[in-house]
Image (cartoon, rainbow, N blue to C red):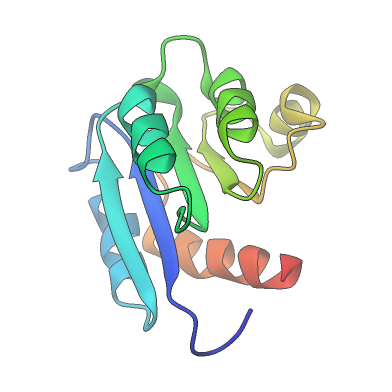
Length: 129
């Protein structure tokens, strides 16, 4: 990932206050642009309306999607395979890996994610570049 490239991240959540420490830590990282969407439908519409400039990553809060974060990640992948995804879930890493197998998740984050998880997420994203 080039050092001059802006990393656009969208957090899909209906509870921004619960994810505030995580989101604040992301916005404190230089070259990160953060957006919030309240639902998966809003996130998918954002991606569809910006086909030339989709977000680098979408963080999906399990509480923001009725059919679960892994189904949401699959829908995101079907919408635009260039967009990476991470999920916020109370599942263990092993359980999340089993349910998310084949989705190419960048990261599995605890519920709620802490400020330290922001750096871990960016490191995982950078490792894919």
